[in-house]
Amino acid sequence: MKTPPILSKSMQGGEDVNWFALGGLIFWIAGIVLMACMGYANAFTGNEKVSRWASDVKRESQFVYGINAPVAMFLAQIKQESGGDEKVTASDGGMGLTQFMKGTVEQVVRSYPELGPSNPYNPVWAIRAQIRFMGWIKARVKGANDCEKFGAAFKGYNAGLGYAQRAQKKSDTPDIWFGKTEYINPGQSPKNFLYSQKYARWILFKWQPQFATFGGLMCDIAHPPPDTLPMIK
Image (tube, rainbow, N blue to C red; front, side, top):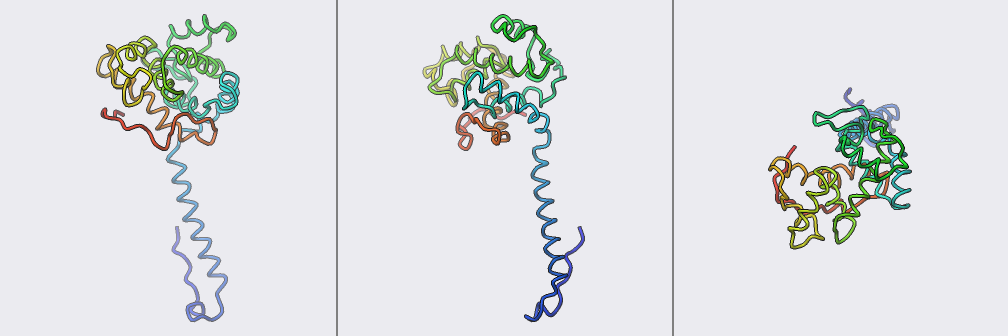
């Protein structure tokens, strides 16, 4: 960007202002501010792919959870799973927007026949299945509040419900997930255990704030619980 225009000497001496020069300076400053804002927005590049599903997530989550449904949380989960790409297939076999495995798809269809034939690459079907399946898992784990319950439920979504339930059975405080039960390895490999422990934290405390404008936040995102395990990328 060009350097700002120099104000006339008359302005420096308290005489008439060179309004042309002043206007140029204001324009230059506005350009700097605009570039800064664009740079800030670019920090969230990629969220557009997730946000385009916001209306579907809002509709389906409010149908299941009511008007205060955690819309931002479900969008954050999509961000973690697929980055908003409904066509992606993972190396482990995860399919579509919500990265359902074949066995999970079959389970969801059995549990929720109203969803119709399985189609994990159809984003609307995937979102409807994701929201209902998360509710199904949440109903089968313990938690002192919804935040703790969803923490355990995300473990179940990523690693399998059995692992979340086993961790809670071994825990002295099964109702408290974050800072307590999340650190109990229920029998996973160290690598898989660490990933599934971070999974809930990434969704709730890393990605969810980026979708806060869509409403329905879960947990106190301004004060995430301290984490004693090393962070992984």
